[in-house]
Amino acid sequence: MKKILIWSITAALAGFLFGFDTVVISGADKTLQSLWDSSDTFHGLVVIGMALWGTVVGALFGSIPTNRLGRKKTLIWIGVFYTISAIGSAFSNDPITFAFFRFLGGLGVGASTIAAPAYISEIAPPKDRGKLVGLYQFNIVFGILIAFVSNLLLSGIGDGAWRWMLGVEAIPAIIYTLFTLNIPKSPRWLITKLKTAEAKTVLKHINANQDIEKLMLDINLENKKAFSDENIFNRKFRFPLLLAFLIAFFNQLSGINAFLYYAPRILTEAGLGEESALLNSIGVGVTNMIFTLLGIYLIDRLGRKQLMYMGSVGYIVSLTLVSMAFFLNWSGIVMPIFLFLFIASHAIGQGTVIWVFISEIFPNHLRSSGQSFGSSVHWVLAAIIPSLIPVLFSTIGPEVVFTFFAFMMVLQLLFVIYIMPETKGKSLEELGNTLSKSTNLVKVVEQSK
Image 1: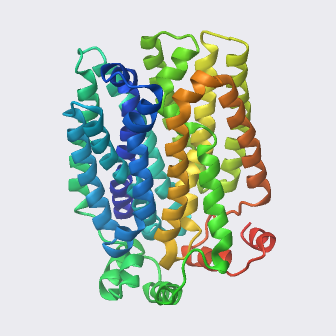
Image 2: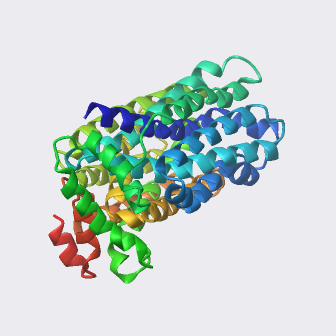
Image 3: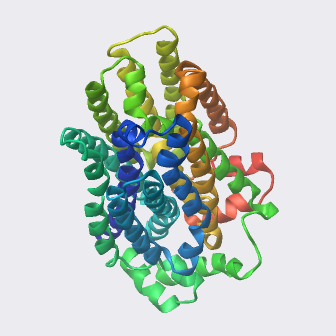
């Protein structure tokens, strides 16, 4: 188990870079808009949004290297892209060059949401899979926290502070890349490539107390489908496809990425000073990390569905309070408290569950394709919504925006109650068969409870 934990943590470090890269731009947001005299639209869509569009491309096409090169090699290349992006962004002198290097970082983020959860789920035993894949999400929120802290510490060093904010990411990116050189290849991926001897060696390391021959037989029976012309859009896979779509759709319609990108701006809009907004952003990061740790602790105990119940109710309450604060002009400490509640609800629910759940619901031979589909839905919306935030805030106002997000979370709660199955404690092969063998959605949900 010790080796599995070390390998899982190493792969999950891609999430640290994901979180850091996603949020570090918030510290440079207003400085860059002022420096390059950008309109709200250009700033949102190009300067800020280009990393997100890179993420969309990485999510759309990340399954190709994940399948062909393997999970391990893809994770290594992700580290290389992060490193180039951090250094290039720091030395950029115009918005187009800056946007190009941010786009490269986005490619790394998008691909990591496919390769890292897929890799960890394929080396983890069923009883520990939730918390091990959850390490990816923990690293995301840890990266977010470190980005907020880094931004605050570097904010007072002068006009070039934004360059240091973005460039410092190269340090963890290089360390992560070196670490990934020492992890084994995914045994389930090796079997799909008919490298059974190498796969058997890895399986002996990670399943020392299990009948390896029987496990190999189960995986081989599942992987015989890999040589058919099946794809995730076949009728038999419509239920896992629907699940991946809906959990990714609701994840972004909570407004989480919009908030993380513009946390200082939102807190400033609520009446806090700029320095106070940056300081409260660190509170957001701490809250995110604490409740993600709680979610990881509970995910294999209570299950994925129970965490989604808790998160959905918390979303509805917190987002309603945030919108009321804007409507009624409440100021001072109340807004940070409401936003901390929102972050806590996300962290223990969607934040902990999404990457675990998507990595479990597709059969082995279609896992990376299914992961790519779910990630693509997530990141298309994550690109569109934050890019529109500056314009929406200046036109319809933040109160209407947060009211809309609250309504969408009511719909998410209905999804959790009536459609979402429980995947806790089941093997990947069992889930692949159960969720794909029937087109009767009600029957499949009942079978998987």
